[in-house]
Image (tube, rainbow, N blue to C red; front, side, top):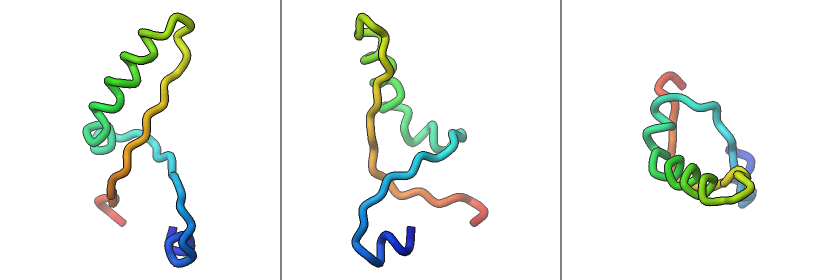
Length: 58
């Protein structure tokens, strides 16, 4: 991440779910579920959210 930021490279990370992250993205998870249920083929819906996150122990 530091290298990307130092070199003006945008990036996206997928993090393992945990309760803190799920609370931060609760609205997006609900919207994705609604979109999937509205899709006749039940394809996965993906939404993205930009936020700052830091683990509690690192």
